[in-house]
Amino acid sequence: MAALVATPARAEEEDAQALRREIATLRQALEGMQQRLDRLEQRDASAAAPTPVAAAATPAATAVLHPTQVPGVAPPVLPQRESVADPSTAASRPDSAAGPTDPDLKGFFAIPGTDTVIRIGGYAKLDAIADSRAAGDEDQFIPSSIPVGGSHRDVSNFNIHAKQTRFSFEARRPTTHGNLRFYLENDFFGSSDGYQFRLRHAYGQLGNTYAGYGYSSFMDADSLPDTLDFAGPGGAGYLLVAGIHHSFAMGKGNTLTLAAEDPDTELAGASETRAAANRLPDVSVTARMERDWGHLQLGAVARSLAYDGDGERDRRMGGGVQLSGSAAVGERDLLLFGALGGRGLSRYTADLTGSGLDAVVDANGRLDALDLHGGFVGYTHYWSELWRSNLIFGQLTLERNSALAADAFRESRYGVFNLIWSPAPSWTMGMELLYGRLEQQGGARGDTVRVQGSLQYNFIR
Image (cartoon, rainbow, N blue to C red; front, top):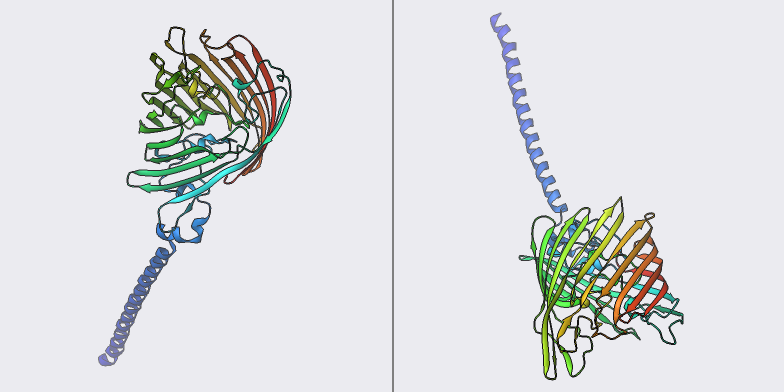
């Protein structure tokens, strides 16, 4: 009986052990299959994530790039803004950062097999201009050119031109010494009576070192107001010049820039017997602070002014300072301003550059650097996402000097109100009312009113 009872118990124990062995074998098989599945998933994930080299070679790389796809470019600190002439895009920035009018750096595409991305940009712009009286310059509004007196002073004028149309080429790439940027830009303002192609910018920048032709370091492109008129307020600092400058980071959003630029003493009454002389470069120092509400920039320039004549010569130091900036108001509105002053500073102003009013030679043969001060203020208001307006006032004043001719510049005023409509990112049109007044050294005055309508198509926006 004991044997009969023990036999079934032993058989059940052997069956249980066999079942445990089968379960262990199945568990090992499942673990192996899970490991194979994990390896396959990792391999698929690696194959789905393209490398930078592969991305450059794919057709998708030719599409519009986003900020993260332009190597090494930090997002802008300044609040985003719109601008018809868009001076901020061409401006040099520390480490070639994006600007407030182009925060996404749209339109770049990669050159296959390289780390370089390029962009072709610019716009086509048509301006229709009607002047109530003669304005001097028919293509851009420059109060210093307004004629005073004369038989044709009160003749109205109408003009249509497309000289502001411009073309730009830009290339960017990362290097071991910082980001490299090359920028080239041209327009058609090379002559007053035709459409001569003119160079506006041609420079390279590696890291924080800039060399080439473009905006003066003393100038603040981000403070210039949004106008349909090409010239802008005469009291603003504005100069295109060849030079070299380097920026030093002074903490987040703060920079200090040192520059040496091509000198050009603009001498009143220059002639073959009395010519301007340039012996040293113009040197400028600019401190800049950028925040999410806007920016402030303080610049100073020192100049060596000189002339050489028949048996006479003299030399004087000149220069000046400029404070400019922008400030966000409410959700999208923007306040823009600039104020400048100094001696021998006419070359650095929008109204007087090229006018020969940096200095004058007095009756004793002494060189006198002329005192100058001026400024502007502008306000941009957005009526809606598509409509905006700008209200701008500017003034520029030169000292009275007995050595100057009676018809030489004394003071100008500039006023603008516009309404701009942008129904699509690359399409802008608007109307602008401008007022300008000129006073000469002898006290004579002239003024005019201009109405300007513009239609603009941007290549990239």
